[in-house]
Length: 309
View 1 (cartoon, rainbow, N blue to C red):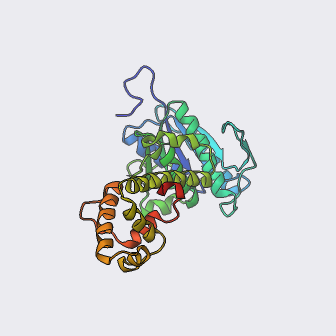
View 2 (view 1 turned 90 degrees about the horizontal axis):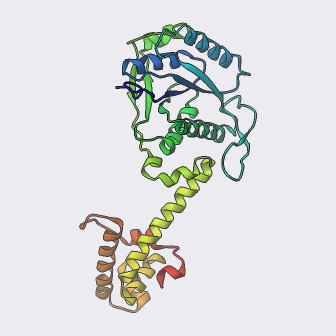
View 3 (view 1 turned 135 degrees about the vertical axis):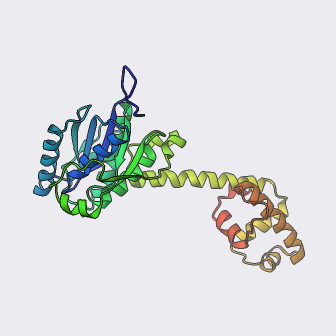
């Protein structure tokens, strides 16, 4: 059942599509969602600059089709040109936008898509909308970036879709020659891990650049990795810790590490057995998971001195 059914204050349902020269992507999506009981009342279109006549024709054709649409509820359209951010206030809201991007070949395009998409989704979430995203239309880069944004911003009830149009219909539809094809297309649900819903703190970076998001994720992973390393080191006796440091520093065999520590190889083997056991516990590995000296080197190299004390 649609989220806006059976309620005195219906939940608005918003469809977000990226559009190129084929405006029928949006109307086909609306029809397919209606068939599933999702009565969309807001259509949000992400697009490149209308300085491109093809883009302007596509938007004009879509507006005409929506005016003639007899669907209930009527669908309001809102267009969102993809713009780069010229300046970002310290509080991370209401960025100052630049002029719309003309082509995805523009080196500013990836960041511009990311920021435009995040600003839109943040607004719609604040307005209480149920969200559907179609990643089929327009340049492929827009769909890729919007998938990334959705993974951060979408909630558990939001959906991402691919629209499959049969080849014969695709050929007949061209660039808007066919705008309605009920029952002739197929929706394919795109699996999405809603990272923002699983870890709400991630949404604090909702207005960050892609590089900032990646850096924040790497910092978080680094903190988790360091915590596991501390857990292992805390369980070791001093000489066992020395053995682990030898492997972290590049020792490739028990014999090499034993020579550095001045102990027998058999003694070193006892040390590594305990180290491996603690590592399996810290990283959640199976009790019989096979570990190597290389694993120790990759997990423990480069740790600051205070972690070892």
